Image (cartoon, rainbow, N blue to C red; front, side, top):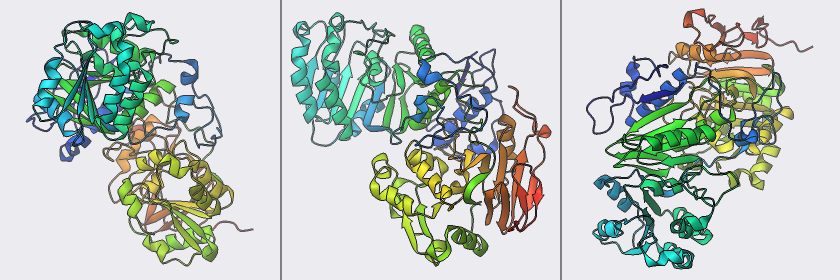
Length: 634
C-alpha cells in the first residue's frame, strides 16, 4: 500500500491550490483543510500539508524493508531502557545514535531534473556563485552532450568558464584518470562547478569495475571529490543535470553489490537517493527510485521532473522550474510508504526529511515510551507553561537548585543561533540571589563536547531551558554528551526547569516539533524529547491558546503516553511521581487508559476527559489520584 499526494497549497505565483491526487487502496488524508492553513506562510503551509498527509497515513500497518540488520533492528524494550552516553536509548538501532548535521548542506546545490534548463534554474546557479571566481564546466556523457551549452549561458553573465569534457566522443577518454589532476586543480580555484551530460539519457547502469565506465573516473577520483567538498565548504555552488544529479546523493545510478563502493555518489546529500527525468516519459526512473528506497529505508528518495530543479542552501530546499520534486519515504511502524509531490515555487526542510527517513528505516515507534515509569527518581523538575514567571515559581526553582549556593546553567538555544549568542541572563534569574548563572548558547558538536561546556554542567545544581522552538534543542544536543550531563544534574539531586519550549523538551514524546511551524503536533523526525519525565507528552500555553483539542489525537495515536497541558504562568513541579501545580492557573492531564492503540484512529469521544489540577493542588503521576497539597516530610 502506497500513500501518494500532491500538496494542496497556494504556492508563490499560483492563484489556486494544487489538486489532491487520490490513489487507492489508501486515502492519504482528509479533504477538509483546517482554516488556519490559509493564515500560514508558504513554507509553513507546505510542510503542514506534508505532515498531515504523513500522519493521516500512519494508521496502516506496513512491513519495513531491510537495509541492513544493524540499521533495522527494532527496539523491543517493554520496560525501562537505559540511555547510552548520548542520551539515546541504548537498544535503538545504530542509525538513531548518529549525530546529524543540523545545518544541512554547506554552500549551494542546484540539482536539475533534465530536459530544458529554465531561466530561473540558471539564475539560481549564477546568484549562488562567489564573486571573482571562475566556473568549472564538466561534461560527462555517453553520446554527444553539446558541451558548450553550460559555457554559453555562464559566459553570457561575464563569468569565466574552465571546460573539461570527459564524454565518450572525446580523445581524452582513453586516459581519463590522467586528467583528474588538472580537474582537481581547476576546482580548487573555482567558485562553482556545473556537471552536465546527455539530457535525453536515462540513468546509467553503473558497473562493478570502474574501467567499464571510464567517463565517470575523473569525477570519482579522490582528489576531485575532496575539492568538490572543499568548494561547498567555502560556500561555493555545484550544479548537476539529468543523471549526473544522482552523484550528489548517497547512491549513484542503479543498485549494485553492497561491496562495490566506487560509485557510491560523493554525497553532499548523504541520506538522499537522487533520480531525475521522473516525467511520464521515464516511468522506470520513478520505479527505480521506489525500489532503491525500499532497499535502503533509512534514506529518502528525491526525484525531479524535467525542466525542474532543487536549489539547496543549508537545510532549505526550494523547488524551481515548471514541474514537481517528489519525496519518497519508506514504510515505518504503523506508517505506509509515502510519496509527496512538492510543486515549483515551494520549499521544504531537508533536515526534517532526513530525520524522518532515519526513524522510518530504523523501525522504531517514537511514541512508544521506553524510559520507565512516570517519575523522577532523583532531583526535581520545574515545568513551566510559558508566559510570565510568578514569584512562587521562581522561588521554587531557585530553592531546588540550592538557594544562595545555586549554580545555574541557562540554555538559550531554542532560538536561532545568532539570537542565542546574543541572549542575556533571563530577568528572573538576574534578580535572584544565587551564587552563579552561566549562559551556554553553544549548539554545535565541537562546542558542546568542549571542556568549558562540560565543566559548567559538572558544577551546575540547576539547568534552565529557555523558550523558543523545541526542535532547536533536539538539533543542538541530541546524540551528544550534553543530554547525560543534564541527567547528571538530576542524579546529584539538582533541578531541571524550563518554560514553553523548555517545558515540552522535558517529556519523552515531543509535540509541536516541526521546524517550519508549531501547528503540527506529531512532526515526523522530531518526536522524541529528552525524557527527563518519562512516558509523557507536554504541551504549553494550554488554556490561553485553547490547545485541549490538540493533545487528544496525540494520546489517541500513542495511548501509552500521558498527555500534560500546562497553562501560562503556571508550573508543574515533579519530585518522584508527585506533581504539584504552582503559579497562577492549572495543569491538565489526559490518559487513554485503554492500552496500546489499534491501527485505526481512536475517535475523540472515546478519549477520557482531562483531569484538571489547579494551583496549590498535587497529583500522583502513576495513579492520577490527588495528593495532599503539601508533601509528607516525615
